[in-house]
Image (cartoon, rainbow, N blue to C red; front, top):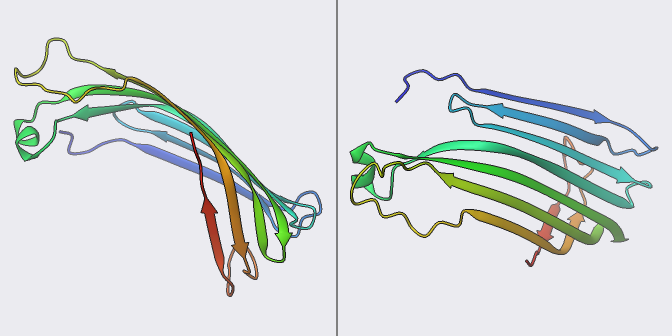
Length: 171
């Protein structure tokens, strides 16, 4: 186990007014790199259009994650023997909302997640290795309604108001 590690996380964000919107648009970029050579990258865009009649959100990214699996329970952890696992991940989400009444927005959203997992076991590190059934390839795709109730005085640096969001998805 490393006493000292070298990890890096960088996030950049821009708040700006575009398209005549009073509410700032947001563009963000995030990057992560760890001493296990794991990395991830994500991009997000949020926009309010037509005097906040429409709210759009899109995000996506991916990465390669390297983790060590020690098993389940204290005994497995005490053994100090791990199974190296690599996960390749790609994700994305989009959401579009429209104002249907004062302070009330409704719309649709879509989410996507693709994960590929690989185990690196040659030979098994211990004789009683009993991994649960592995789902090595997994794709999750969900679509559904979204609703927001928003009486805040501003979206950022709020001093009064209520914000409530509900999302329901089905694969």
